[in-house]
Structure formats: C-alpha cells, structure tokens
Image (cartoon, rainbow, N blue to C red; front, side, top):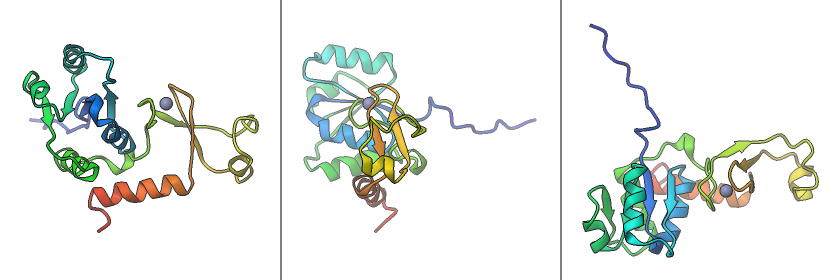
Length: 164
Ligand SMILES: [Zn+2]
C-alpha cells in the first residue's frame, strides 16, 4: 500500500473574513501572508456570513451575536491588537515563507518585478539603489525593502515567537 504524501494544498491554508471593527488586525493578517478579506461597514452581517460561507473563510469578529450565527468563526474578546494577533497565530501558525507576500491595503498577492522601465513610477532612492521591488497584482501598489518593511518583519517574528 502506498501512503499518500501530505501535500500542503492551498485549501489547507486558512482564509479569513475579518469583521469591519477589526481593520488593524486584518492588515496584520495580510502582513503574515494570510488571505484576509475585510468586511467594510457597508456590508451587512448576512452578507459577511454569506461570503465567509461561500469562500470557505473563517470569520473573525468581536461581535458575539455575529459569531453565534456562523459556525466557522472566532470570537475575539481581546482588545489589544497584539493579543488579538497572538490569539490567531497561536491557532493558525503562519508560514514564515509567506510573510509580507500580500498587499496590506487590498489583500492582493505581491509579485517580484523587474525595475526596468519603472524609473518614473518609483522614488529615486529606490530605483537608484536597485532595491528589490514587489508589486500588488490587484491594486498595483509598489513595495520595496526598507526600514518600514524590516520593522514589520521583526514584529511578525516577535509575534510568532521566533524572536523572544
Ligand atoms: Zn493591493
């Protein structure tokens, strides 16, 4: 008998739907590389549940009533952002390889881009130093290595217990 090889399919990586009251947490989940959609305030609770269900997303909310309406949800009682993050990453350990692989604004995936022809679109400090640049496939925002990215990376490692 041949034993099945465990392949990490994209289906096994958790996807989240984050309640409109938890915008900060949503951005951090994206920094970790999680697919995290944000339920803006214009979306009704029923729609939030519908999207979570149809896209197989875990609903993250601090609204007890909303959480009670959807089986696959996490009710956060934590108020501080770091505690909220720790709660999620302790249940769903993120893959360090995926850190900073998504756009924190729109949840799009980032791709490495060639700097050629981008002199006009990038600050001279980035283009001139030929930094490694990635772009969001969805909203086209640029991301490059710099002090801001390194400090986020450091925080991600701290929050997952890699740095203590
Ligand atoms: Zn984007």
